[in-house]
Image (cartoon, rainbow, N blue to C red; front, side, top):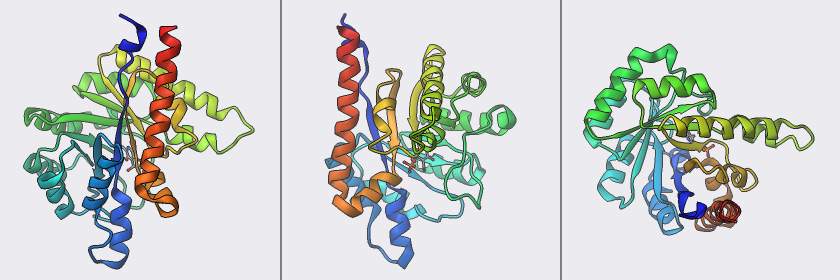
Length: 260
Ligand code: PXP
């Protein structure tokens, strides 16, 4: 078997939270996140990701119900490990749930889960989700200790937080980008060796996606804010298509180099 056959395809999950942010600015129905989700699939997304936050600042309960009724692709529901969110997930049974840490005052998800520090609570939530046939992903920093705990607790997937890498990439002088990327590469390998499916996301842009797409153990990227923001300038369809092409081209390069 050639190495290219061993390099799995890379899925794109488009996070449509910030379409809801714009809608909620006026409290009406426009722009509709469901319409954006359908357009994302047309443009090449493999799945839709939505974060139902405890304060409902963007995605609403009704959005989740409409996605579940209408979408033809898998829904990845991001949620905090609370009783309320667990009940909602069990009612809708999305394809997957990604458990994230959540603090009310934060602007976005700041850092990954502390799996060891919340082991009992996470374990109870993960068991219930898995019993309902929902795949469970844990959003963690690229850290071997968190990966070991994620494996021990019975998660199916880890989503590696790419925020520090993307932040470091803004500084073109320093070697922070290289250092943060190396952590993600090492963690992706470590998690895959442990038998976990590996995803990644947060803060990814046209500039930063290529290097992450070239990590062969990563099989899904979840990308939102940048795509919606770029949509303002060139249209959402076009921003997603370009991201998809950058991911696919980067992946094709490693398939080529591994099989050479
Ligand atoms: N993955 C997770 C777990 C997230 O919490 C977020 C942000 O909601 C993303 C991916 C997408 O991040 P961004 O919107 O910065 O692309």
